[in-house]
Image (cartoon, rainbow, N blue to C red; front, side, top):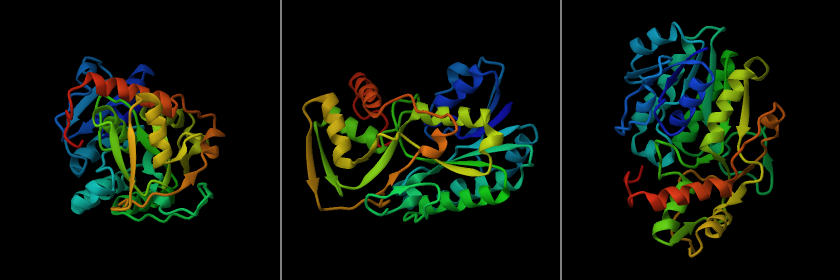
Length: 310
């Protein structure tokens, strides 16, 4: 297939693009390189990869690229509640408007695979597993825009939406603002972390398995089309405190301090069932602990705070 990816040099895209090329797909990436990342540079000698430095909001550019695309993966996004709160206009135009333009300008024979977030479940009912039939209750602008776009995609009758768990792990475009990555970084360098709402639970997914979900869905698109899927590690519905205990088992000396001084801006507190996507044959490969081991190795090898907060 010819696959168009917006934001393809980002955290997930930098892992996904090489996998697509290895499977023989032709890939076009549109990315504005906001963080000056060079994560795909060593793949540009591959004749099946085209890189366009451009903005996903450039409708003329995107419409031209859609003409030849068999599948579109709109990864370009301002990720997370804090970043979207900081730039609500960017969140609206990138996270919703640009991706909705893609939905409006694709035909029924083109495939759309969209990365949503299971933060749309918001404050869940304690002890209740959230399935794809559970009501969505997004708290943040990030969650609301993602849920609104999922509605547009599923209403179109042509698209698959992933309700991704909190993604973690080493990527060529490494991020420090993701919960597991952040806590592991603090454990490596500060040997302590202060938790607020430490009992809040969520699910987790390694970045390699997030990329694997796209591959799996493109290979099984007809059977999975027009549906949403939770995607995460079924044995990793953990509280922040429980997560830190796993990190401590890897790094050793790590003080976990619980505080009541602040609150989670995204109010994520839920557990999810991943049975639906697992029934299609998808299974994650990387455990939470193995992913933390990889992060710990990376953080010990890297300079301290190489990317600021990102």
